[in-house]
Each structure stands twice: as C-alpha cells, then as structure tokens.
Length: 182
Image 1 (cartoon, rainbow, N blue to C red):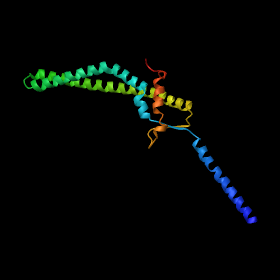
Image 2: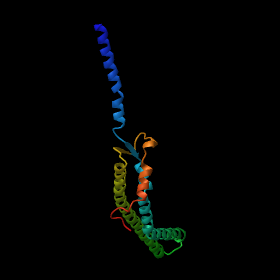
Image 3: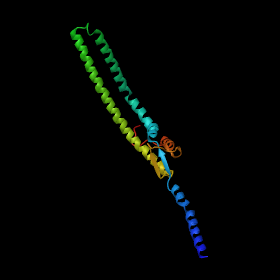
Image 4: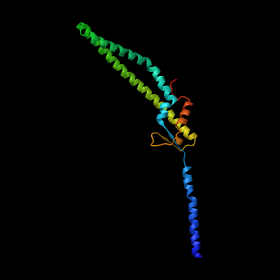
C-alpha cells in the first residue's frame, strides 16, 4: 500500500506541474504588444514631407528656370563659337570665348550654390519633420498600448503588426510641426 501511495503522490505532482506549464506561455504572450513601422514609407508618404518637397520645388523653381536659361544661352554661344570661330576676327573670337568662359563659371557657381542651399533647406525640413514623425509613432504606440515598436529595416514583419498605415493616418490629421514654415 505504501508503494501505491508514493506512486499516486508522484502522479499528482506531475499532473500539477503539467497543469501549470501553459501559464508561463500565456503570460509570455500577454507580456507585450509589438508593432512594426516602415520608416522609409513614412518619410516618403508623410503629408508633411510631401508638402515640404512641393514648397521647396515652388520656391526654387524661378532660380532653376534662370539657370536653365543661362545653360541654353551658353549652349548657343558654344555652337556659334564652333561654327563661326574660324571665320571671326581674332579679337571677336577671343571676346566670345571669354564670354563663354565667364558664363560657364557663373553657371557652375550658381548651380553649386543652388544645390547647397536646397540640400541644407531639405535637410532642415527633414529633421524637423522626422521629429514629428517620431513623436507621432510614440504617441500612437502609447495610445494603443504597444510595448515595443520596431522600425525598419527588419528581416521580416507580419502585416498583422505593421502600424505604418495607422501612423500615416495620424500624421494626415496632425497639425503642422512646431516651427513649420507656412
């Protein structure tokens, strides 16, 4: 009888241990809510970023048009020099060559200055908007009870945990970032 009681004690202990095995698994699955956000898609499609790009294009369009006009004028001068340089007087040919060189240098300086200014302004806007995007992701995560939001790039993220579209919707309804130009 003693051996039988020991055996039942062992079986009861084993059954009790097996009964508690699923609890850690359940506790682990309920431990945290994880989300994924595609940062490239956010930056490419955030309305604030799209508006910034459009505003910069509008602002730089007149200077870009002037630069293109100067480039066309330079091309015409080069064609004229190539076509008529041999039949022009040496003084006229040298004067035209100096004009071509001067205009070419001015175009290169203008193009570089324009590119530098555009890059600086775009970077400043991108930094300002990036902060707004980051704050929006954090706000969304806190509001919806996420314990962890993983940014891209990742090896794999299930569409089930992708919150990028929801964050984009929140950005569409957000006020412009502080310090945003009108």
